[in-house]
Length: 147
Image (cartoon, rainbow, N blue to C red; front, side):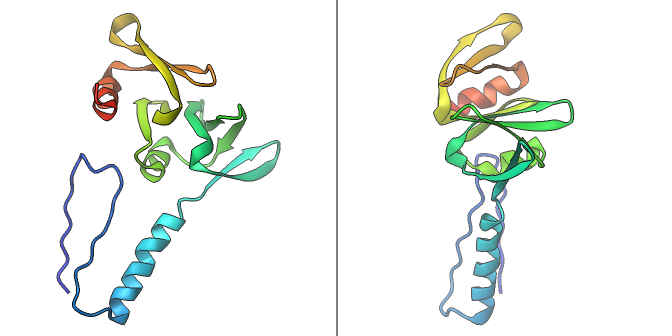
């Protein structure tokens, strides 16, 4: 079987296309493995010593606090998550963008953005939570929003 992989920095979520003249057992196995990768992206959060499955649609902002990763939802709950920001960024998809070393936001939950001090930008989420887009992430943020 011929395999081709293209690495593209503009591709925010991996996808696979398989060209074949026959759907063999090996190809079906490959499809199952690839689909399982997507299913493994279930996000669990801890709140009050209980663990909850958190849907991507509920996520507004993810931040770090010391060694903890904290997930803020649109219903104003905060969950402790046992993943790194890097892992979360890769599993959340196109609706999320990194705005600093310590924060990821859901683009759909942004209320507005304004200029701040020292070349940074202040971001305000629909719930009123505020954070800062640092200079090193500002260019990527603007590109993702088409600004």
